[in-house]
Amino acid sequence: MNTPAHVVINLLCLGRSGQSLKPIVLGALMPDAPMVVFYAVEKLRGTAEGIIWGQSYYQPHWQNFIDFFNSIPLILVGLAIATTIGSTAGIALLASMLLHVLEDLPVHHDDAHRHFYPLSNWRFESPVSYWDVDHYGGIVSMLEILVVLAGCIFLWRIYRTRGARFLLGSIGLLYASYFIFAFSVWT
Image 1 (cartoon, rainbow, N blue to C red):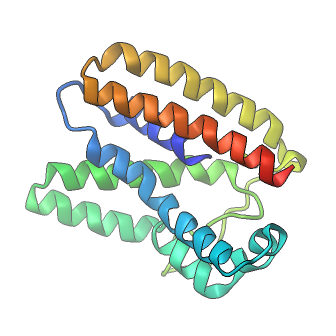
Image 2 (cartoon, one colour):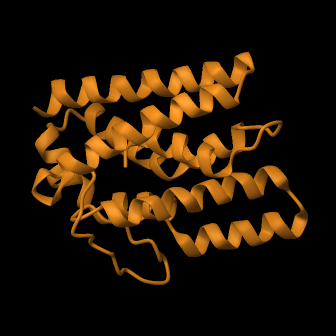
């Protein structure tokens, strides 16, 4: 799934009126943060798009870095620690990270993460992809857009503070910007 979609879905699932949304938003972003670092580094090196996603992405050092943040065992250890010390922000952040990882499982085909890293190198390669049209990416993308749109409208009605609405507007803008970027670079 695209990162802003994780934020919206995680807010729908975990957000409650009156609580801080920051840990949920941060937790929804963290599993994809290494991808942003990876992409920025490769672009700064002058690597071509086709090489970035066809070769560089699959280099072991990048895979380890990315999979560290998508590891169910490591997130569960963090969640156990946060629960033990009674950190509600830590619990919200790690629950949001776990939810992000579980949302990714059914929609990653050949770009699947090792969700049990470092205990296992196994990858669940779903027959469905959120982006690859050869694996229903067109359908999944349309469903994702509808969920994000409906989710933003619903959340806009629930969260009435200026900060929450600014956050929702930013997510919508980021989501639209991503698709504009993707279509201009990858098509």
